[in-house]
Image 1 (cartoon, rainbow, N blue to C red):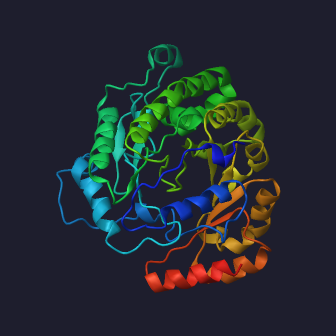
Image 2 (image 1 turned 90 degrees about the horizontal axis):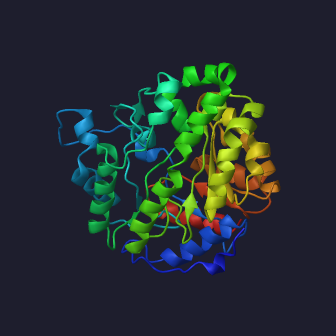
Length: 367
């Protein structure tokens, strides 16, 4: 793992976050499983930005709303308001066309929903589709992502950080292109072709990431995305949501080698474990090289509350990785009581009131 001191650091000049560099100190310590003065805290949950809401403006279609560049960026800026951003609540705008944007640039038709979008299968026949399959930097989706990024950079100064979009290459992209049910069958009936498709979906990833990383870095931005954790190195959020539906043997065969290559490419990696289906592969995930942390997302219903996962979270910490979790305010005291020390723990707590946030910070400082 790389020494945090080797990365150049700078203050991005956020008007609502004068303590930016001190908060970065806490993040950098957390990535190493350490604590500066307290555990990092973000005052919102990770799915809060994706809740359905009403808009004052009307569009002819949902697609038009998603494609409205100025609205997307300015709406985010207006929702920041003038309230000071406390603790590690970094204001990060990440250009977003949904989790299947990467597959869309390979040619999958995109359907647009209220809070997300999804791809329709585009690979019907491996023999015909694989040779011609290419990531198209000239397609509308890619050009729109560049436009969103450039416009955000033109208006962000002093207000917010601009991050890169959510990218899902590898097997997640292959499942979008082929269709989830069909590729699950393919792993049994035609595993070599399914693996070839996943590899094809991985090939452009590093170049596409670096394209946006260099664009953002040229304008003084740290590396950040939807998780709103900034890094002065290259940050990546590896994930494999598709793996919730396969065995650990198939995870190790088809997905692990791709994730391994991804992690080696980046300075900092925070793995997104989306629920207990993906969690069955935790031992393999913890063995990934250059992995700093795990983001744990428990499911709704019986998978709540968070305290039932305390032994699991402790096992991750014991494995030498930090954790980032969503925590209800009512769960803060029981959670602190279950963990002897805050080393390697980052908390995301929904709170919008400044005084309440200050009280939370004071409590976490005593941990």
